[in-house]
Length: 91
Image 1 (cartoon, rainbow, N blue to C red):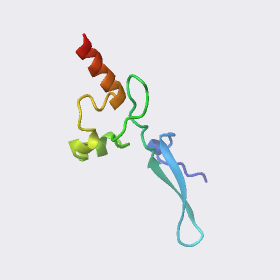
Image 2 (image 1 turned 180 degrees about the vertical axis):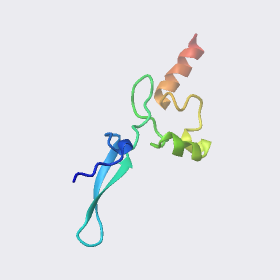
Image 3 (image 1 turned 135 degrees about the vertical axis):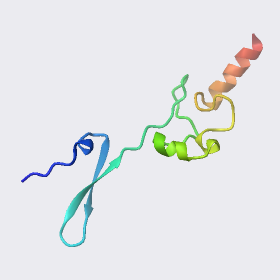
Image 4 (image 1 turned 180 degrees about the horizontal axis):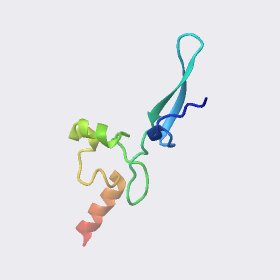
């Protein structure tokens, strides 16, 4: 008899790991895969100081731990933001 996991766990969005239980049993445990890092919208480099958390856990963190303390910190990296500010001042 084949025992399938419940339908929500059949997708590849779940990370699988075999866990040894007491005795001679092995069991399959499921975890949500960690989301990808946030990237700069100009140069596509990963943004620093932004945690890799799912939306439900990101809401529970403080606002200062979600992003750096500068304008547009969740969208641009520091170098790209610096060039944008310099270009806006020149014009």
